[in-house]
Image (cartoon, rainbow, N blue to C red; front, side, top):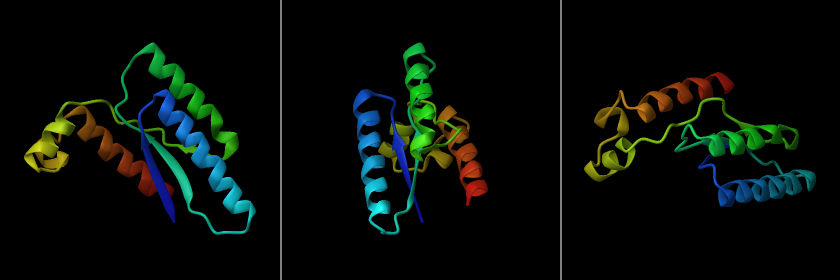
Length: 112
């Protein structure tokens, strides 16, 4: 019933998300049952540029785009865990991304 789009805050990702949202809207208008699309901001960094792009993305709510409040901070523990073949929750549960993913899951479950 739902599509979660993990995205970094860069120009290509924002452009692609806007295009996807427009296509989903067209499908809905044609009468098709289309799952709700939600964005999970991934690899977030505390920079002025990233905050500006995030603000622009969040202002698109009038288009029906849901952007989760919880962001996933950039952490080198994520690629490390994939190399070891361990889930992040096991490899580095206290890493910034590990904590953020658990918070996002709680937010996601509250939405359902």
